[in-house]
Amino acid sequence: MAKPKAKPKKPAARAVHVQLDGENWVIMREGNKRPTAKFDTQKAAWAEALKMAKKDKARAVKKGKDGSVKETKDFGA
Image (tube, rainbow, N blue to C red; front, top):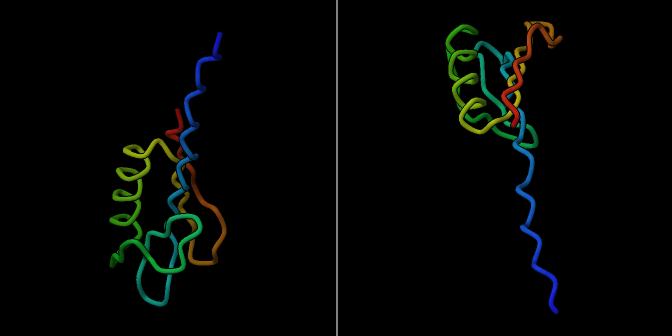
């Protein structure tokens, strides 16, 4: 009797980071070299990052001007 095939595991969603890049606040997906989106304010970037992370069941990370982590939200399954 043949064993049932195991379902392939879905890769873990990549975290969504909001960070300062020059004069713009950008959204960077973990592992990307270029920003996913650019914003004038951290508030606008964070709002969009939360939407993206929720949709993808990922983690959102907000960084301050100095690069330190200020807030995280995890929407993982």
